[in-house]
Image (cartoon, rainbow over all chains, first blue to last red; front, side, top):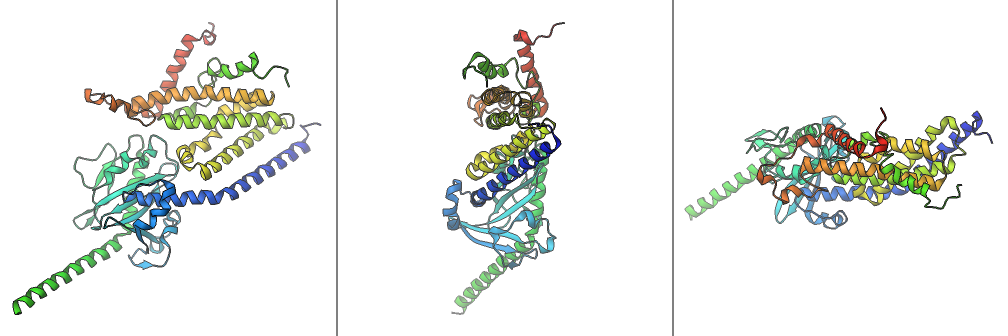
Length: 254
Length: 214
């Protein structure tokens, strides 16, 4: 058989392409459920880890509902809307106009402390980066942050998913007084005692800038909601004061 | 098929030559790009070495089995399709059943496709030899690639980050207290090239076969 005839060459190419395409499609379809499951578990694991609960991926499912008390979907006015927060694909949402974006928010309760977990999504050097940042119930101090990435360079940008990069976020604050500052990721290192900045990664500048931009962009979307919650606090405390004044008055009258 | 026994002298040479005389990186200058990119730390370097070994050995055998059927005009395309299909398959399987490993490898799984060592060996060896020899050649070549990768990664991680396989060696032996600091240059790609250069230098100094006649 002459393997160099045009007809043979064309036939060989056609058969090869069909076999390979069929093989890969079958593999993809059969493996997809397993892959999706891993991704879902990892997301739960990351959400838990942002509030300091570290579990193996396989164990995340079981304790997720113990700690994550509610999942909200917000619009950019800070109003609650219908939807399932966990299923929102931020990668798709951030491409939409800001006015129609859906903002997922997770609220956790660990040992009596309420913390707000905000999912993040942005651009790294080679592809998307994402993460979760948890705020204390003052909606100002950071409790913890986790980041991950699709394909940042190992040893450089990929270091954003290590404790070395993530731990310094704890106890930073995102507001200065009433003004929203976010948290800066600073090349060459944040100044000692700076409450709004952490160290960037040497050799991973573009990824660090990506984290920086992601934080300020994503957090700023939640400002209307924060304002609402905070004014609710104020109203609550005013009511408390009125109550106590009333009690004092009562006691004086009596 | 040759009548040699499975581990004849000739076959053993297929395994041992790439370690030194015919090293893919230092002598044939193949796969240098990946040697620069993933040698910042030992762990990805080792995982990459193992993945390249699997893909190269299997692809070499497949191409060798098909070598009489492949039309010579599209042989490079055929080789590329075989490599790419294998790599995608490995990637999908890892994502489903070894998620952590697949995260560790991230982009490099895809980069295996572009590793010139694989194409080079398929074209130079798999196309002309039997499956068993091709398998040995694949394993040998990837070992040659692996040890360079691991040596480079060893020095870059130790001097650049002060750790080995993530373990903080220098911190444990208390070197930082004497005023020592990590060399940030080692993390950057140019130092990988220089490290590979030093290995080539030492190798050429020791190995007389590699010294060019004047």
